[in-house]
Figure (cartoon, rainbow, N blue to C red):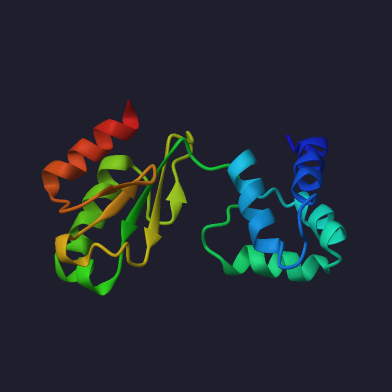
Amino acid sequence: MTDIAGIQTAIDRFMQSDTRGALLPLLHALQEEFGHVDPAAVPLIADALNLSRAEVHGVISFYHDFRTEAPARHVVKLCRAESCQSRGGAAIEAQLSHQLGVAMGHARKDGQVALEPVYCLGLCAIGPNALVDDRPVARIDSARVVAIASEVEA
C-alpha cells in the first residue's frame, strides 16, 4: 500500500535544503527511506521541484539503481562486464539462477531474492564478482555460488 503521507513528509524534510539539482539526491533519499521510489511519488516530486512528471519519470527509468517496486529481501547483483564474463561469468550466472530459482533480472515470486545484472564492480582482477546485499563477493566459483544461495535462503 502506498504511503502518500510518508512520501510527502520525506519530500518536505528533504526540501528544506537547497533545491537546485535536487532531483537525484531526493530520489536517493526516498529510495533509502522506503526501499524504492513509488510511482505515486512522481507527481509529488514533480510538484516540489517544479518539474514535469515526464522529467521525473525519465530520470527514474534512466538510472538502473532506482526501483519502482519494493525490492526482494535479498538482492544478488552479478557482474556481467567483459572481465567477469571472460573468467566464467556466464556459467556462474546459470548456476546462480538455478540455485536461487530465479532468472537474471527478476525477483523470485516469494520475494526472498532477486538476481540482477550489474556492469562492472571495479574488481576486475579478482572476478567473477557480485554484490550480495551490497557486500562485495569476489572470485565466485561453484562453491561460492552454493554459499551465496545458502546465505540468502537463511
